[in-house]
Length: 201
Image 1 (tube, one colour):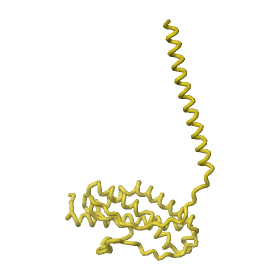
Image 2 (cartoon, helix red, strand yellow):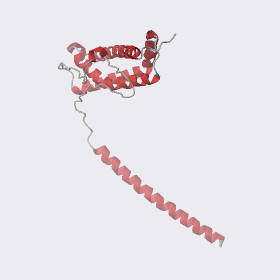
Image 3 (spheres, helix red, strand yellow):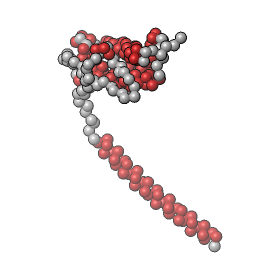
């Protein structure tokens, strides 16, 4: 009797597993069909992208880090727009976009490796200590401004420099690195003045 009961239970278990297996096979078949459809779709073409330069406004922190600008230039200006005096590039928009992305990736790497040191060195120069939240604020602000700053600098290159890909990339990267260092200094200096200085011995 026990053997008979065991066989019935085993049969029910095998039946249940068999149903699950059929269900999984059906789902896998549907996924494969979906994958084939996705592969057959034509690739997405990215057209000309336009970047807008916007100032980041944060309610919990005061001050704005402006890459390539002096904060005193912004007094009385509520909405800042970069005056894009476009120089007609001889480089195709697709290549210009690709170059911009390569520059952005390199600058993001630079921020990861060098920005902590720049932040600490600047505080030492100013004999000033800022809360760590300002470091995160500066990082986010720079990252948001990178695409627009890269676009502006690529458009300002001379025709000869634009046509030399390696020289163009290096020139824009070095310029923006300088702007980042200067921007961090101006931001912390301005913050120090606003807070009347939290001095270290």
